[in-house]
Image 1 (cartoon, rainbow over the protein chains, first blue to last red):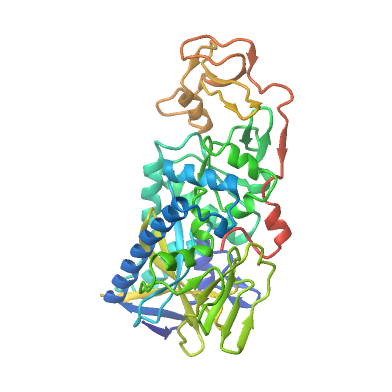
Image 2 (cartoon, each protein chain N blue to C red; image 1 turned 180 degrees about the horizontal axis):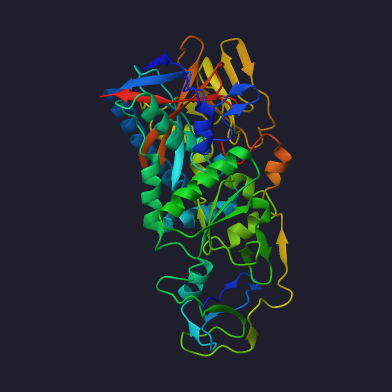
Length: 377
Length: 94
């Protein structure tokens, strides 16, 4: 694994915009950064793929474990949601996608930092934009990336299962809008009838006990780029629980078990010493000297405390309700001050590619940069 | 026929009917939802939802209801999305 500098394509802004990436620059800083790329060899890609598949399998075992041992309280999942999770888990509704964040230097074992299994973004840049970059910049090289094709294949599989049009709901945020629009595009390419909707425009009719769109038509199948943990705290959360068996939600509600960072401690409890897991606990740092304390339900790198002996570094934020998880520190590799985190995409339950976000500090947050990758056979 | 009892709330019965109000399988109305008005289906799709009345099996004739949800079926919006608005720290994705 190497980080190499390269000249960006002269018209890179125009090209990535044409591919749908309208948020390529944040402030004066590029978010899409093709002044560098990461290079892997084929064996390293094999290792990433195998580790991601193994971790995903372990995560599914962990959901079963949470259900079997009623560990919902440890994850601060409310009782009524726990029942809906158990039901959804039994029924096995389709789950489309997730992104594992891995710390890896290409030499030791990749370590799971967390699993964004419910509402991952940075999808378009991983699936499409870096692929076109590769074709332009290194047409003979390869890339760990079948995300786009796998998404379309999965939607095709769902054609017979879905009821009515498939709604794609998100909030009015540029990145969320583009992520939902991209996913909707892959669904349309798969032959599905789709409709876009804002989360705030989802309607509820008490009389008919159902969710409706802006024309008061029933919503029976919906992809939502909005976390379950937020939905359940909002006014319509109880309706989502009441009608759980009648509305096909993607991602399904059981994904909130995996996106809760408490699952990291449960994974360690189940598989202590696993090479791709970091030591983690729900009740304190135990004997760890270098660790990270994360709120179970934090997002975008907020409210993280890094502890190294007596040294402490805290990131700001408003999270913390619901308790914390203490996880062994896995410092991101340092490529002359650039710290990459590998986002490993799991599509329909299988590793399908990676996207790398890079930051200047030890915590990856929502201002980190996306840097493309390639591998040589 | 799509009808259900949920908790203590009684849901309004919904049937998919053809142009002469005969109940057909829900899938035909789903196709309307899909916006498919061509292909194997005629340009003018003769199916629509029928609200109210009683739950019926395909082939039976719906009556006692209407083509629009009963008055009082008011729609409330804004019950999702509030956390993101209050959060102010970005979107629902990460």
